[in-house]
Every structure is written in C-alpha cells, then in structure tokens.
Image (cartoon, chains in turn brown, orange):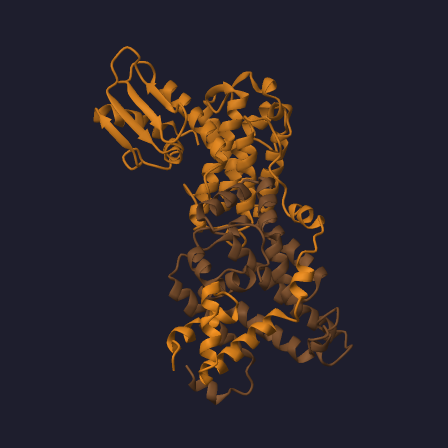
Length: 202
Length: 338
C-alpha cells in the first residue's frame, strides 16, 4: 500500500535543483521537500518502530539532516525519494536497537526484545514476530544499494516494479530480479534452521 | 503445466511486495495453484513481507499523524540565509553555502585547496577578503592588524594583510576560524547597507576597484562562491552554482568590469552569455564593426573571470577574428580580483 501521496516520477534535474536551494540556505526548499516526502518518511519510520512518537522523532532527524547536511544528498547517485526513505529506515532501525538496549540495560527484563514495542505487541503480533521484524529490517538496511533502492520504492513508496525501474533508470527485468533476490536474502536472514527443500528450489 | 513457470517465478519478489501491475496479478495465483515449488517460495516471500510490514493497519493508521512542529524543529538545525536586499542576496546565499560545506570538512581541514592554501587557510583568506567591506561599513577588525606605511599600494597592503590573517588563523582551530568568518559575514549581512539599496548606492574604492557598495556585496558573493567551489573540488564534492538569479547578477557585474578593463579601443566583440535574457553586449570599441562573436556558459564565464579557467581552456562558442576573441578571454582571465 503506498505510503506516499504526493510526488510523481523522479526527475534528477528537479532533485538537483532542490539540493542547490538547500545548499544555499533557502528554507522554502526544505518546506517543499517536507511537503513531498514527510508522509513517506513517517510511514517508513512507523513501520519499523511501530511507534508514532518515534516516527515523529525520526522524521525530524531526517529533515534536519537534509537541511543541515545538504551535501549528503547527491542527485547523481540516486533520487531524493529513495535517499530520504533509506535514511528514515536506517534511523528507525537504530531507534529500535537503542530502545532494546536501553530497556535491557535498565534490567527490567532479560529479554530486550519483549520490551521493544512501547505500545506492546498488537493483537495479531507476537513477540517472536517482533524479533524477526527487527532482524529483517536490519538485514534490509544492509542490502547492497542497488537492491535496497528498489525494495524501498516497491515496499515503502508503493511503486510497481515497472515504475521503480523507470525511477531508477534500470530495465524492468532487472528491477524484478533485484526484488526477488533481495527478498530471498531477507527471508534467509530470519530462516532457522535453513530449509533444504527451499535451498534447492531456485 | 499450462502456466508460465519461469515467468511467474521471476515475478514472485514483485508479487510478494504487491508491486505487480494489476493485469499481472492474475497470472501468479493461477500458476501457484499448479506448482508446488513456486507456491512454497511464494509463501515464504510473502511471509517475509508480512513480517517487514508488521500487524495489519499499523503503518497506515499511524503514518499520517502530523504534528506541525517537525518541520520547524528540522529548520533549527541550520540558520537559513538571512533576508537581505537583492544586491546582498548572492552573498547571503554563498555564505550559507560555505557554512553547509564546512560541515563536511571534519578531519579534512588540511586538504590542499588553491595556491598554497589548505581548506583552513582558504576560510582564513575569506575572513581577510571580507574585511575591507566590513571596515568600510563601520565594523571592527576581527584580527589585530599591523600598521601599514603611508603610500603602500593596495595590492601590497592586501597581500600583507591576507598573509598576516592566514598565519594568525592557522594558529587557531578551523572551528574558531569558521566562527570568526561566519560572525563577520553575519555582521556584514546585518548592516543597513545589506538591507537597504539606497544605503548601498554610494561608490567606494575597495581592493583597487571603485564600485557602489551594492556591487561590493556582489563581489563578496562571487568570491565566497568561487572559494567554496575550490574547497568542494578539493574534497570531491560538487558545489552547485549559485541560484539562477544570483548567478546572473554575478555575470552582469563581471561583464561591466570586463567592459571597463577592455576600454574603448579594443577590437569589438559581440559577447553573449548563454541562456540569459538580453545577455548580449558589444565589448570594446564602439566605432568599428564587430570583429567576432563569443558565447560562454554563465558558470564558465564566472570561473574564467574568477581565474579558475585559463583563457584557452574555457569552453566557448566563437566565430570571426580569433585575435579579438583571445583578447577578450585573456582580459577576462586577467581580471583576477578573486
């Protein structure tokens, strides 16, 4: 389901122009970026953290970083959409990890993972699911950039693989293959023990 | 098997993410009903997506919660370019641009930049280069100056001062130099002359050139950008050219100064800067027919005037008398006021 309601196809020239205005201290450029991508950024963060309050913090950090470190984004290396999505995801994963560490350090419970969701697991979510979700998101953050981008566009930005291919300037078949390779890698990161039947079934 | 095994297998990643086109959605379940190995992989991939996604509804129900404070807080991470009159806006923007770049300089301050300056010395040089305008507008020198003997030529006084300033700053930390440069730039941008065009209309001679104070502000913007670009190149970071309207203010100023430098006897050249409205001038003698035409891109022209292109290297479109063109390019490169 698309988390993002604004923004159409990616134009590298438009992203470069926005970055130019950010570099030169034009506040309205941040306002525009925020209007276009804050929904995406919050959506990414809330999916990882399960916490609206944490997602607000992540969104603030992400846009503060875009504003204060505009040289961190380079339009020649990818779109602003994927850059912000990846940054939000990384920050959100860090938040969950540090939350788990804090609770563990506080000694409230030996199992840090039980303490992760500050709202408690939802009715249809188990603690084990929660643990595996964090493992998966950590693995997603570690994917090679080429796979990570296409996953972000398909999963967080709600693009079809064809739209993602156009945005990334890659062939459709490549987008399709990257999605499958990425997802297989993610599945392996939570697979225990490895299932020999699936290992064979390439 | 009636359905396309290999085709569907390739689609399973996109299918699990819900990233197929609607017409493709139908082909997958048909095949999964027939093919055990695809069905097993499909189940495994979809379960992975489910775990990424969390319990149903979490993302969307919370994803749209908007508190207006997020943007305001993010904006606090860095000061915006101050609002000033049009003549000072390119300087305000260039200062913001260098402030953004120095955040990338942690641990890289000794990177060689231009002349024999590293990044630290380059910022110290800007602190010196902004000083004449600051003093002229009644601000205090930020670094004590040694006495300059009566009758010293401005170039010599300037060379002494910039060397003195760089030596002074290199004994401090880069952060202290940046803070001083930022403070002086901020003070310049807070002067009435930066905010009121009328207060900036009077001409004054700084660094050997007599211009209205408004144009001296433009020169500050020009030089700040050129040195920011120098530092960016040294770091391997692409510094974008100034915003379009600022770039054209710099171009027009540079053309005026180039025209003065060429005088009224140089062989006339029709000079155009690509992409600008009315950006076409006859430089040199007005009494002879035009000998040549020369077109430069705005950024290239600025880099030439800033001494960052040799006259023979700058990309150009030229027709007509080569000597007349060369004369313009050489004179532009020799302005070297930066």
